[in-house]
Image 1 (spheres, rainbow, N blue to C red):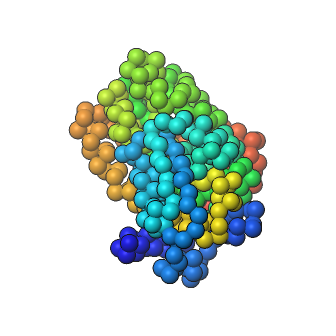
Image 2 (image 1 turned 60 degrees about the horizontal axis):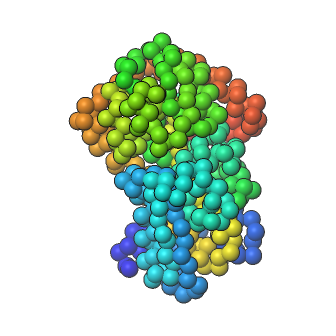
Length: 362
């Protein structure tokens, strides 16, 4: 177990500054992660024997494919928990929505029927409504800025509380890169977007973004997207390269337009009902492995991006880079989305998100 333990510790140590560990008292009904500093590393102790205690069989469900960052996170956590506990904690893993859609998995996690869930924050926003404000259009110029924004102590504390209030314990935020538009029309201007029937997630702000850009946003389950593109039911969709490649969307779309309008923001969660029922030692372990998994996810996302871009172009899709002036015009068109967010979530939250993003602009 030595080498893998060292690797786990190094991931967790790297992640502590950004996502922190949670208060682990089993008698504490508020399972709220508290920000820590690099010096507060007592929870990461090679001397803790996690093989002792009650045995569990947990369920980890995701709507993502195994060969995506989402899938890698599932495998990482399952392997680490099994190894560190000597098989005392076994996690059954379900990919590709085999246990339900993102929304259904969120509901099952909230109820305690599913232990772990990872997926898009846009779907989790159906249960933690304030999460929609994470997806303010063109707020983040790249994934690194998004990560640093979500790691800000004020931002982290705010969302930790919102998750707790709604039946989840947040283990951390990660992403699958920036979201891009794909289409069979070569989009090079705002005018080219007009009327494009684009599949979006069932999320109010996502719909508002594409309405503001003049498209025809069409909420649709992701499992239906490939067939809908093939049959011409929709003209376009938007996702990060990770998803475009893993689900072969490039087979039905000639162009990948570098809109970079949003990060493909994801959350890693455990059911609060289940978390609160665990011993302090097992809570500590879950938080430790979760922190390491977030760091691992971010590293994997970055290391896979250029390869995914090469693979889709080799398969025949063309990557279209938009002029800065076009991106600026798109951002201006989306100002109305910020007004919508302020009306729905309040100035304080929107300003917090904007200020944290500005602070971490690179």
